[in-house]
Length: 104
Image 1 (cartoon, rainbow, N blue to C red):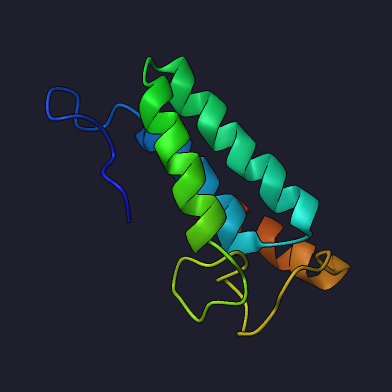
Image 2: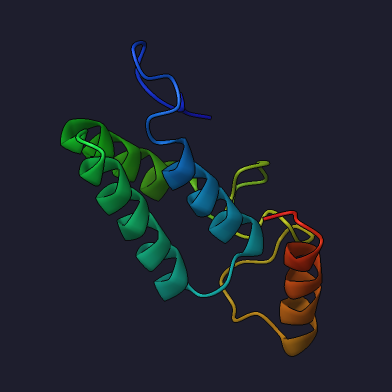
């Protein structure tokens, strides 16, 4: 839902967003979400865009709640509503199987 980079470097922080999107697809606990959001901010700041990183952090903290019925909520890979909860062993197995197939 956010551009992947600047006009000059159109994929500047794409890797940051892809990793963050994968975390959001999986979902999990509140702490896991907070950690994922912090990693996004750090990653985007590291590519030289600290102001954009702050803006992104604000956006995902407000808009990424698992309680919104959106396609980009925390845990959107599972049926709505999921909320905040640890992944089950079966869910972890499903995620690993998809990663193995190259969906990460």
